[in-house]
Image: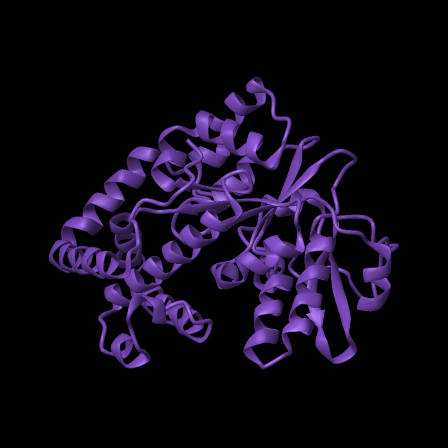
Length: 343
């Protein structure tokens, strides 16, 4: 049980997990200030920040569905390795909005579907998660949620369940994405395979003209590129269906190279009243001068140097995979530039 009074309307009680066995939602007490110290809202993040698990309480899903209506929410979908944590933090301005970075309750929705739950049950769980995540931290504030990459196949469902929601798809250009994979080493090469496994099950790879056997024969960077292409095909199709008023796209280079323009445009897209002075302060502040995961000082020059070093060390492999990916994209009718650009 929680050691502090539980108030389901208080957004500092984060909707953390779906408890399927009892049809409940587990809330965890995560004060606003704690969000800045955690790149992701996971149990590992809680342990690193709090030392012990934060106060938690379970509440029946039926009670919550009856209590909370659907509310406006911003969704920040992303390709990984593109500054999505940075942008989430940049938009989290007290009095204006709060940013939620990869809440696990949305991952639990994916887990339900993977384990064979009925589509209606999955939609009910996703609907409840969105209602709870949309609770404002202060009156008049907005909420921007950055789901994990696992949720990309569910983007259309989330936007259908939240008809007032607006979304961005933030992505790194293909070559930059591949450089990030090689920079991060073997764990990241394994991660791109795990991600693509989920995309295979969700049916995102077959439209590229690939079978699971084809993917099995691909190198690590080909697998990474296949996942990148699957995401671009998905969001290009979705953007065409729902239009630019609800879904816009943005690149990591634009985010890091033109932060004032990007924050201004992103805030306007999400309907957030960020003043120019606040935007200038944010663009010059720690969100853009520190590593989004570690918190260590990290300048744009350092980022460029690290990328150049990794690019040079793996130039042959990257060049071959980029050429191959362009051929796949051409055959599958996928544009390498995403539609509905924010800038």
